Image (cartoon, rainbow, N blue to C red; front, side):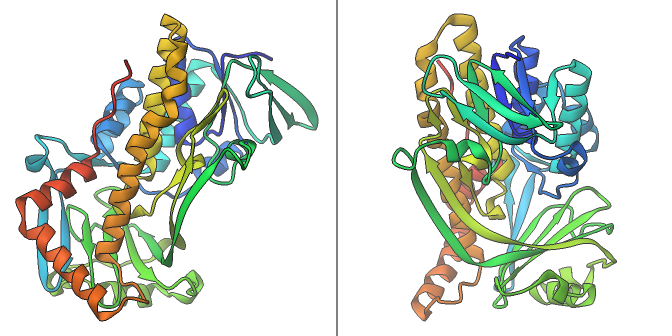
Length: 394
């Protein structure tokens, strides 16, 4: 089999890239290790930057998002008895974010791909990338007990942190930057109305908490917990009680509780691999970078990678601009590192660090006060939260 762009991974980044390429008349094939049901079963966040929303609309998959997604014009920061609203729309010249679950984004993209008759092959194993530094790369993989070969012009590695794509790049070529945080997020999903119509990021001496949502009737809440904790040790009652304790009194009093649909603990890390390309292989999303969820950047960074690679490939095929291919990593990383900085900053600002001394805690305290008391500080938070502009591909 032969295609123009081979895409490894049928998560939202791989599906979005495939959808955009298909619309542009560029042939592509997606290979995915899991089944479609497994991919759709992943519970992930869903705060979409303005740029991600616009890109989904451009890809022709924005109808349900526009109908069911909840547009947020601000977020709240709560700490030390204060609650400060960050007016995203006013501070960024009209930009907003949209709450629409990653599962729903994936579903919309899967349905669009089915309608397009573009090829997706699920449940493949032993994917290997060959001759990626040459002019004729190809993939081999196993499906239904048989070995197959997929010839292509380029490979997009959208297969996540543990995928084969980044592992294909020689260790001596790759530089890795990483920070592991000494805590995780315990998340609870419930069919209860959100405690507030906008997201609330709260600091408390017991740790960080986040009041998020998937819709007007489904809520997602998070608590900072030590990495030694286990989700099964947290009953619903224990979770709700601790969340109420960490929220300002007036919010805790109006919190609607109910049975959990899902509880899990996610560790937090910052991770970046450079470069994001090797030969004709291009890393996209989690294959190249991981950010703590405090800044709501994970899915959005993947979308910005997709935007960059898609526009470079368009010019490569339509205008023979092969010179742009070598710029993918630099362009993508320019935005990636800014999002990594913002995610690290929000994490440092709002979490309790077990090894902090008195000086560090005072600096953290005054940083929160400064940023929320200054128009410039609030604008910095707002413009990063709604998403920095995509770089033009020229």
